[in-house]
Length: 105
Image (tube, rainbow, N blue to C red; front, side, top):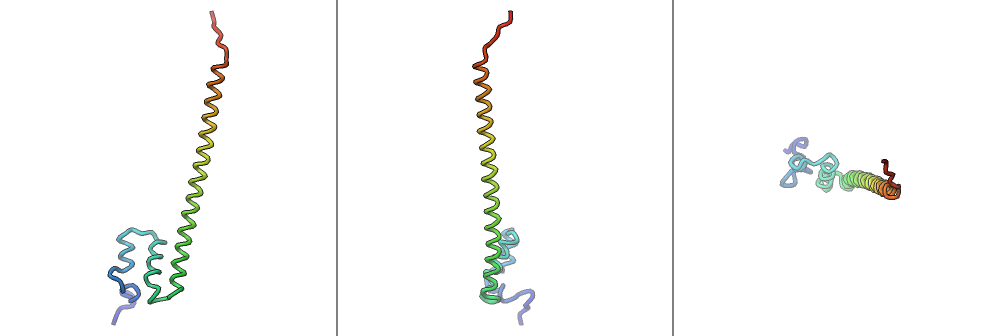
């Protein structure tokens, strides 16, 4: 008789149990759950497990998209600051060139 707590069939059907793979590869919570649900769906909850995996995939996608948007926003701001700085430096240079030099005797 198998121990359904320590060695459930839906996890022991593969050469490597999902938990061992997840821990060995230092995977984050969401990625670990995706692997867990995808590997067990056939022997446990079917489509429900696939939907759970999809929920975690959607969460990861959302986080990546948010991070990309923040990076692009920061780049835009840095680019604008760079343009303003260059413009300011150019103005100061032209001002120096156009300002008459007064010699004091």
